[in-house]
Length: 131
Image: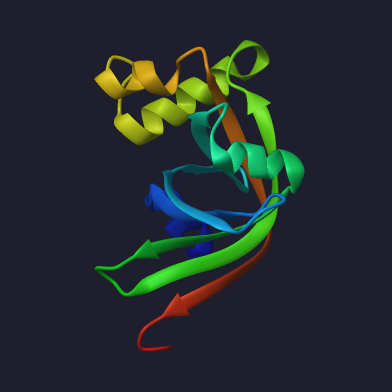
């Protein structure tokens, strides 16, 4: 499936959340695995607070060099980054930075981090020019 390959190949997306306030859009590094998107982030970030109040999210994964994107919406939940999700966090870190020894890996796996898991409910392909 072309959409799955596109999501697997890319590592950066824009994530839109809205808790009880205005919408919030932020670029995030992510991993697509088994039909879900995974993001490591600070536990006290605005996007986490928004998801706790409203689990509905939207996202856009873009490749500006090919003028292609996938936009979608879905539901998100917050997972602890430690304990039963240790292996998932390690897989996410290796996908994004290549090694658990990378300097950024320590930040991503820090004590105040969580994993956002997004289950897409709708995906739409965007291309310019349209095919």
